[in-house]
Structures are given as structure tokens and as C-alpha cells.
Image (cartoon, rainbow, N blue to C red; front, top):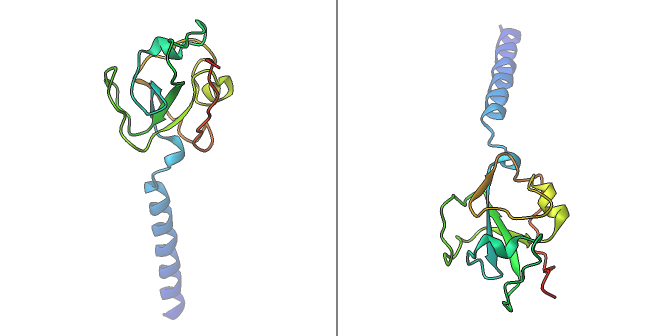
Length: 132
């Protein structure tokens, strides 16, 4: 009877481990929202992040593309993005492509890309900008 008990216990453990793996929330593939914002995380018009226009907006602040799985669409210009987001320079072609965004041009505020968190690697805080 002890070998049957060991067999049932190991079968139960395998099933439990498989069930836990199936319920695992793989954060590497969540959706992410993207916004054009200044260095302080305040949403600005997406034209400021359009590197095809070489638009620095006449501002002393550099512009960034901010992203987070916690961002939803609809934040208006002037809105301070919720904490927890990350950013990269709006003209960083490699970062844009790593998230499945166009390598250049305008990215609409509130753009949501499916299954991108983790594709871009770790959070980037590039200070590269086009206005220098």
C-alpha cells in the first residue's frame, strides 16, 4: 500500500505543479500603453515625438515615449502619467522597434501594443533627444 501512496502523491504533485504553471501570469507578455511626454512624465502633443518632422517644439525639455502595462488610453495633454512607467527617447529607433512600434514617425498618444512588455528588454531611461 505504501507504493500506491507514493504513486498517488507524486501524481498529485505533478498535477499541482502543472496547474500552477498554467495559472502563472507571464509578465513578459503583457500589453503596454505608449505616450509622448516630457522628461517629467507630463503628456504632450504627439507631434513632439514625431522624429520625421525633427520637431523639438522649442522647449528646453527633451521628449520621450513613456510606456507601462498600467497605462490606459485617453490621458489628455497636460496629464501627469501614473508612476511606474519607463521611458526612452522619442528618436531611439532601436527602442521603438523592440516594442513593435514604427522606427520613426508619429506614435499616437494612448497607443496600446499587445504582448510587448519584455520584448524591449529592461526599462530604458535614455537621455538621447533630437533637440541637442
